[in-house]
Length: 337
Image 1 (cartoon, rainbow, N blue to C red):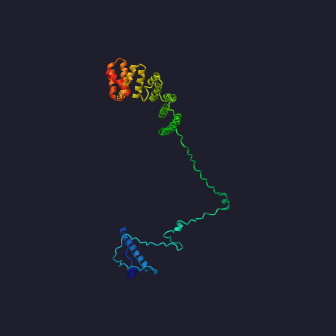
Image 2 (image 1 turned 90 degrees about the horizontal axis):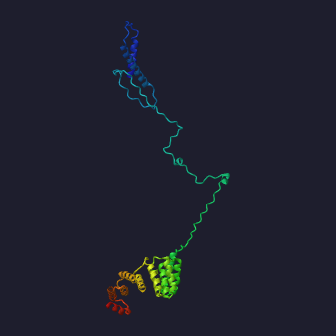
Image 3 (image 1 turned 60 degrees about the vertical axis):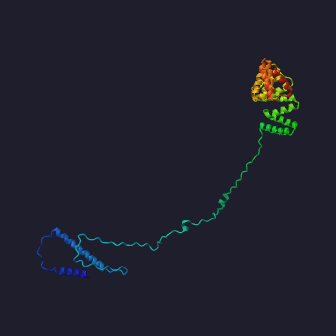
């Protein structure tokens, strides 16, 4: 209240001094003096406005004013007026606006789904016709087809059965099995050899020769067929035919020492001693312990006039120790000459 009283006294003092004698006219103040005066008047108006605001009646709910500032008599007036602080006015939401929830309920985010489908109208129900279930395809038919044996396999089966019959001493039952094997596969070498042997042992030489001749036709590389056929021919006294058979089969497979010794014996009977000696030598190179072959070589050499070589061959025949008794005396006599 002291600030207000002081301000009122200053205003009264100015009014009392107004009727006094007019002061002598002065020269107009310079602009430099007018500006401080204007600033002083502005400061006084600001102070008066602050006082009026302080004296203005305030509502009961407003906070009490702070303690008044000390007298501004000695406070220098700043050259620029201080800024007026503007208090922020809170903006209240309308009462009817509900506050947003902290979190949306689960029913809003994911509404429950009705498990039952909506009912169809009669027209739609008549239009929707369920498709019949697809029939399962029948299982694939599995046909078991027995693999047919090849001709060679068929021949081998008959041949093995024939072997079992021969081992059991039933040669007559083995022959039809061997014939069936050759009918299925004519190049079955073992079956043809066994059949020719069984026929020869049974005294059926003509049938055996037919089997051997067919073997030479289907398998000319097999020398065994020529050797077996030549022995049957020689047994019949056909030495020339037998020798021709063996000479024709020399290029075949299986020409062994026995083959050459048989050919050499036939050549000796035919008087072809040089060829016979050569065949005996080839046979003895493979089997040098055969006494009868040494005797045959001695005869072939003696027929050629080679007596010394012949005696040496006869001595080798005696040294072999396997000459038949019927030949021992003959060979001893030849070796002593």
